[in-house]
Image (cartoon, rainbow, N blue to C red; front, side, top):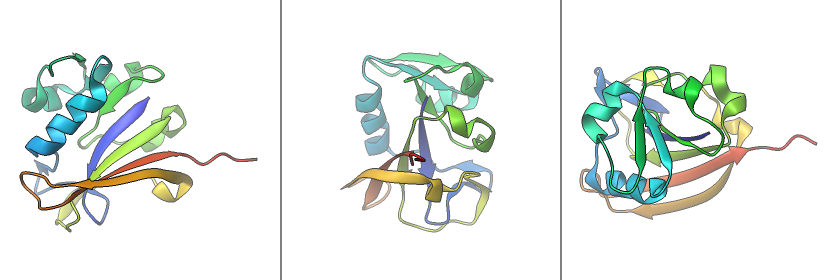
Length: 139
C-alpha cells in the first residue's frame, strides 16, 4: 500500500483534536496522485474528501487492513506501526511548522529512504513540502 500522510515538523498528525490535512492545493495534488487508482480512507476522512473525480474512493473503518498492494491510503490520525511491513511507499505532505500535536506518527522515518522532495505553495501555508519515502532495503 501507498500511504498519504500530513505532518508538521515534529511528526504531528493532529493538534487540539483537529486534522492537519486540509489545504486546497494539497487536495488537488492528492487527486492528481490518485487519478485512475483506488483511494482508501476512513469515514472521518471521507466526510472531508468525499469522492474525488477520476478516483475510486473507498471508505471503510478497517481501510488499512483491506487496502492491497499499490493501493493508496489517505491517513489522517491512524496508527501505522502495526502495518509497516505492508507499506510500500509513504507520501508525506509537510506544513513546515510546529503545532501542539496530540497525535504523532508512530513510525520512525529513519528506517525509510527519502526518494523525492518537492515544494509548492499551498492555500493555507506559504510553502508545503511533499516527500516520498520508500523502505530501505536490507542486504
